[in-house]
Amino acid sequence: ILNVEQSPQSLHVQEGDSTNFTCSFPSSNFYALHWYRWETAKSPEALFVMTLNGDEKKKGRISATLNTKEGYSYLYIKGSQPEDSATYLCAFFKPRGGSEKLVFGKGTKLTVNP
Amino acid sequence: SQTIHQWPATLVQPVGSPLSLECTVEGTSNPNLYWYRQAAGRGLQLLFYSVGIGQISSEVPQNLSASRPQDRQFILSSKKLLLSDSGFYLCAWMDASYTGELFFGEGSRLTVL
Image (spheres, rainbow over the protein chains, first blue to last red):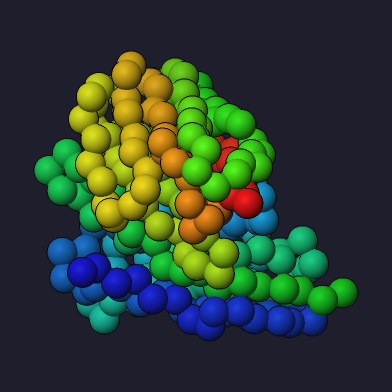
């Protein structure tokens, strides 16, 4: 069974704080790791697709790093704003000879208080 | 460009009633299609995926079924809903690249009473 674990499960921060959370995944047979931002009652929005060990990607105040050898990825948010409040999902890409699928973690729910 | 739509957006159904959620994709051909569900307090769980017309794979045993009658149409159904079927359902299609990026529909909120 392929497990993708995210921690913490939830997080409350004050506006302006910087924060980070973790995604751990199997380190063998790595293909890609995805980060999504998911607001309640909306579709998940793709943030990053990470494929190479040591990758670091950035989009505005949000960035992510990848360590495929030890099987973890960090998502960082610098200077959190209330509009950053959402659930952040990571997903491990598992190709299966045409039956490709993403296996999601349970997410980290971030609440940014004004 | 590719678009994906699912409907209805919100549904309130009594226990034992049938269900049909529909999803269509435009702007691509022969996509891999997926149904995910988020139940209360849980993560995003893959229910079904399809690599082609009439080809359905089920990930977990459940009270639901899926069908793909046309290349870009994916339907989630139940003959008799259970309380535990309540949740937020998402349809998605996968980009053909090897990185597996998923593009999601707007979601359907199902409440079974």
